[in-house]
Each structure stands twice: as structure tokens, then as C-alpha cells.
Amino acid sequence: MARLMRFVRLVFLCAFLGLLTVSAQDIRITSGVSDEPVLQRRPHQAADLHLTGTVVGKKTNGKTIEGRITSANSALPNFDWVPVGRVQKLSWTADLIGIPTGGPYRLEVRMQGGVSVASVDNILVGDLWILAGQSNMEGVGDLVDVQQPDPMVHSFDMADHWAIAEEPLHNLVGAADRVHWRNNAQGEPERWTGERLQRYIQERRKGAGLGLPFAVDMFQRTGIPIGLIPCAHGGTSMEQWSPSLKDKEGDSLYGGMLRRFKATGGHVRGVLWYQGESDANAKAAPAFLERFESFVKAVRTDFEDPELPFYYVQIGRHVSAMNPVEWNVVQEAQRKAELEMPHSGMVVAVDSTLDDGIHVSTPDLKRLGRRLADRVCHDLFPRVKNFGELKPGPRPVAAKFESGLVKVEFSDVNGRLQSEGRISGFSIHEADGKPVPLIYKSRVDPAAASTVILYLGGKLPENATLHYGYGKDPYCNLRDANDNAVPVFGPLPIQLSQ
Image (tube, rainbow, N blue to C red; front, side, top):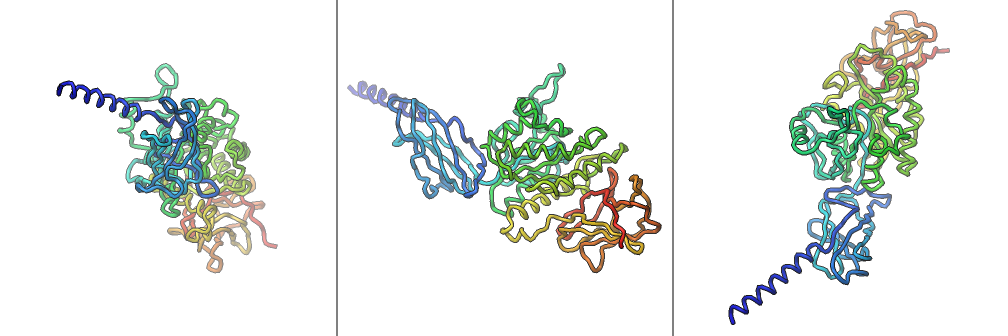
């Protein structure tokens, strides 16, 4: 009899465990969110989340799906097992509306009255930023003393997985999109996986960029979590980024960027862009301004946001013997684009140190990230910590010749113009563009903090122009009190006093 009772108890125990096994798998989230995501907050400062999933079991059709969002093990107000959806034929959809800015949160869903729970951890609600362009956005800085991660800054890595952001952000060889893969011995694009990929990651010595410093700085200033979507690819031109290639999806740079934009929810706070080096040639440079403006317009159209903030870096230095003219043409086009495109802004890299002949050093990538954060905070967070009082940084207004002096006037200067040592970077040019050695002394006007006086040691040529940062590897050291550098510009006509 005792043996029979033990057998019966064993049968019931097995049956019970079997029920638990089924119950533990009776609800799944199939799309909408995964661990470690950042959700883009909307104008009401909260995010909306649409989920889909499946259930197993009998008599589930029509059952209510409940959702809960917790922070530090406590349910958020209005998110403690509330109805969010309904089951239809073993599938369900759910909508959670108004998840507040912040985190990290834990999301749980279940069938009403059910035991099984499907969950997603470490959800943040904040601002998403696309990182795009070529190598200086991809990041080729030495992986030494890099920006340290912050748990409130995540990245949608190039393999389409959310994680806490850390350097290097870009991993082209393991990317989900074919356009980023390297060609194998047969000349075919091949994605690296497994041990080969892990060895590549472990042996990397380059890869620091400006995206993570920007994001950490933004979180520290505003308290708003940040999500990054790295999409850059070194050595790429505006032609390769053409919106006309978007139908190729992951076989094109634009298509891959657009796919990743949609995969992260179809809403972002803005775009950070650093590109132009590959267009500094005789064929592409004259068309750069038109192509760049068309690109920004297309992004805003495809992202369904006509006022999408778009911030970019003016290309800096290149140690090379190649013709410098086209390099300066691209830099001047970038300067003019800021004046012509609303909801855009430029920061300057010409004073940056390099880790090789063309790539910005890790310390100055941090500096560029900070300059971008300054500009974004001025434009988008003017009422936070008086960021609205920040000015974009020095921009040339006019150059005027009088009594043997050229006075160069700037706008948008924070405090007073300044330099380390004597001011360097200005040059006078003849009407045909040829530089003329005339400037023997430069100083900030004692009576005007936003004006530089250039002292000339000879006669000013007819129809002379002024350049700043002429050539591919100039030494430029003029900044304002907030460390915003004077951009490369020219030719700027020199006006004669009446």
C-alpha cells in the first residue's frame, strides 16, 4: 500500500512539473523590444511601445494580456498589471502608452490570471542618435584611455543587438548589413563570425570614436538616457551614401542606415555626421554642397521628420602631399551648409591632433564629442543649466581693410577669442587664389573681443581674399572661451573701407 501511495504521489508530481514546464513557456514576446533597449521618447516626454507575441495552451483565445513595468522592483504608476492587449488565435498584440523618460525598467507581460511571465530587462527611455559618415565617425582613434561606459548609454550594435555602449562602437566585419563586410579570397562579401570574429575583437588596437563621449556627456548634462545607432563606414563618399540606393537595403549604406532606424522603432532625436574626406577630389568636391544638402533632405523625408536635427563635423586635417584645393572646397561647402540648412549645426576639427595621417586622436575625439554636446544642448536644451546662453562658436562675418590693417569680424563667440601662443591660420590670397605672404602679426582687438586684427607688411593685392586654415595640414589655434574653434573658411572677400 505504501509503495502504491508513493507511486501515486510520483505520478502527480510529474504531472505537476509537466504543467509548470508548459506554463513557463506559454507566453512569449516575439517582436517590439529586447533586453537593453533605448526607446525614443516622444514630444510628451514618454515612449509608446507596441509588442507582439505568442501563447500556447487551450482556451486562450480572447484572453487579456496584462503588462507591468517596474523600476528597482517597484511598479511604475499606472503600469502595475494593467490590460495592454488580447489573444487572438494563439497570437497577441499589446500597446504600452506613456512609459516615462528614465530607467532602467523591467517589462513583464502575462495572460490575465496566468502564472507564466515573459520579460525584458534594462529598458531605457530617452533619446536615440544615428552615427553616420566615414572613418572619423566610425572611429579610428587608438584604444587607449577611451571614454568609459555609462549604464545609461546603450548602443544598437552593428549586429542588431542592444547592449551598454562601449568602445569600439563600430564593428563592420560582424555587421548585419552586407555593405559593411570585407571581401573574402573569392572577392565576395563575407561576414565574420565565431572564433575569427572574437579574435578580431580581442586584437583590435584602433576604434575609439566621438559617439560615446558625446552620449555620456549628454546624459551627464541632462539626465536623459541615450541610445546610439552606429552606421558609419570608413572611406565612403557622398555618392556611396546616396539615398537613391535605399532600395538595396542592407547592400547599401543609406539602405542599411534606414533599416536600422526602423529596427529601433522608427524615431530618433537626431543624426550625428562626420564625412567629406572622400569627396575632397576634383570630381566630387564641386558637387559636395548640393549632394550634402540633398542627403539631409532625403533623411528627413525618409525619417518622416522635416525638422530632424542634423549635426556634423567640418573635416579637419590631412597630412598629405595631394592638391589641397579640393579639401578646402569641401570645408567651405560644409561651412555654407550650416547657413542654408535649418535645424543643423557644425562643429570644427581643424585644431584636432591626429593618431595617424588623417584620423583624429582619441583625446580630441572626446573633445569633438563635447563640442557636439555643447551645440546640441544650446539648440535642443536651452532651458537646462543655461545651455541656451551658449553660442555655437566663432563664425566669420566680414574682413575689412583699413590703414594697412585687416580686421576680421566674427559672430557667435563665447567670451573672448583666444589662442595658445601667437594666432596662426590666416592667409591673404590674390584674386586667382595664390597665397601672398603679407601677415606679420595677428592679435585679438583689445576693444572688440570678437575681432582679429591682421597686420600686413606689404600692399594688399586687388580683389584680395582671406582664408583661414588654407591647405590640408594647417596649424590653426584660434578658439573662443568655450573651446569652440574658428572653422576653416575662404575665400572671404576683403572689403576696402570707403
